[in-house]
Amino acid sequence: MEVHYLIVAAVALSAIMSVEAYKLNCLTKDGAVASFLTGSFVGVFASINAFFLLTIFTIAGFFATLKDFSRKEEMGIQEGKKGERTWKNVLGVGIPPCLAVALEALGILDPMQFAVVFISTIAVAGADTIASEIGVRDRKVYMITSFKRVEPGINGGVSVLGTTVSTVASLLIAILGWFVLTEGLDWMLMIPFAMGVLGNILDSVFGAVLENPGYISKYTNNCSTAIIAAFIGLLLFMML
Image (cartoon, rainbow, N blue to C red; front, side):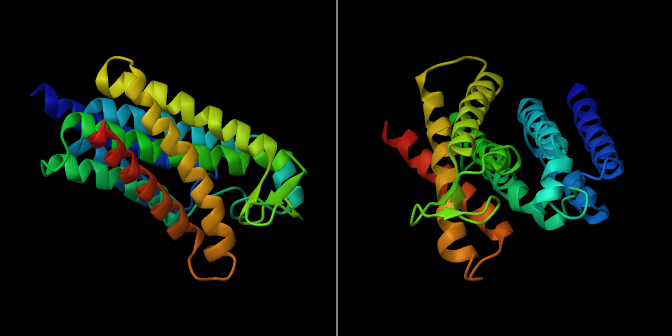
């Protein structure tokens, strides 16, 4: 019975957060619906610990979006008109952790493997969000494939500030995520940390090579790089 209460609470919290995010212009209506469905899926099929981790990441993403929004608006690099994200944005970062939840629910991943994959997807998404929202303060941006100076906000552009904050974000997410899901800390948390860094690098490379020419969208980029990094992390974990 207690489990049922936790599921109801998770679904209710997903609804509240989605509505509030819409009111704050962090999400469009369809984005709020996608956010609710993503949060509810994790709340129903994963542990309350996994849901808690996803919730913390979501809240942190909203804060990163709202921080210094006026400056990003002046530069013309804000998301949407007021920083709002659509269902495509939400699913771009939401599908990878939901995939991890589905694989565990089906018995394909054991709890430790799930921890590696799930935390890695969150670390990749968190690193990319922080790099995109905070890294734009750095005017010295370089194309990752050529290291030539480019304008802030361009796909494939990297900066010292963006790389630094995204790396720190990956480490913090890995530490918090590992502690929450495994109820302890050990050196294995370095795998999702490294995958967060790798995923952020892949995101920039894909942005320069595939997204700029129009072969893929930013949403496909976000989704694919998180999945790739997470399963590389899984392979590393299984080899150790």
